[in-house]
Length: 126
Image (cartoon, rainbow, N blue to C red):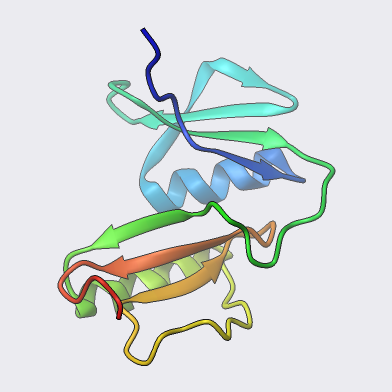
């Protein structure tokens, strides 16, 4: 039977990406799934593999067709998490595709991969 694994993000600096995403999502690097070109991030209790990071030499897509959505429950929590992610090394990319009243904020990880922080109390964006 086929099962869904984990989303994988292509990155230029695997160690830096692992540090960012582990801190951003309160995860840990699984030592048994670790190499120079790969990291698997798991929940700290070891219960789940959550995210894969793979060395990539291709350029970052400014508007990728697939990206991560990170959820928060309130607008206040969204504001706090966006600021926390910025202190961890995320950036605010120039994003001209926001709807009139977005429930999400677009950020980019230290490699430039975009992701969204979505306020579930206001979802979905119209």
